[in-house]
Amino acid sequence: MQMWKARSRRRSRRGHGFATVEVLVTVAIVVLIGTVSIMALGRTDRGQLENDVAAIALALQQARLQAAETGQPVEVTYSQTDRSLSTPTQTVVFGRGVESPTPSARIVIRPSGESDGLSLQLVAGELSRTVGVDWLTGQVRTAE
Image (cartoon, rainbow, N blue to C red; front, side):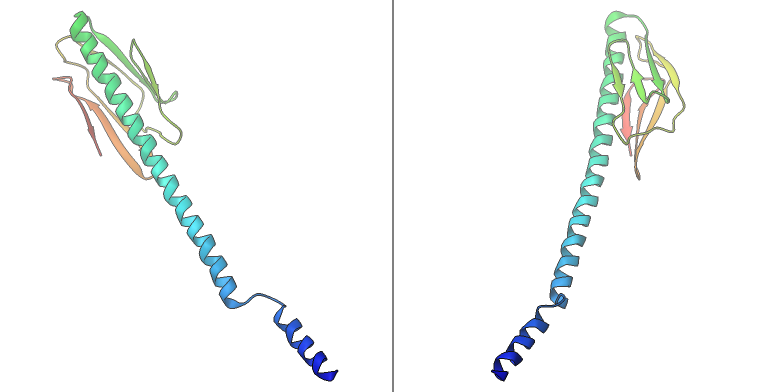
């Protein structure tokens, strides 16, 4: 009977606490989940920024085409407070997390392609892109 008690004591000692391996595996899983989450947020910022740059470039190109087709100047307005760019046919509002330090501006795109020029910087986290309209040719350009 004494032998049984000795075995029982050994088992109860093993059952208390966590083994070092268990703690290390748990920490590794938490670190892995955190890393994946941070990477996913970075992709979201990049994706949103790219979508906004493409939408703004498209809106500016459409305004340029509208001016050429109608023979009338087209007014484009950028509002820093509203975080948007407006043309007569559409308004592009920046997505979540995308800001612009560029001050509000109003430009006119003439049928010849000439304009007042615009350089709009968009920022999402540490990422930055620029959309611009050349003042002489009216060509729309994007850059990092």
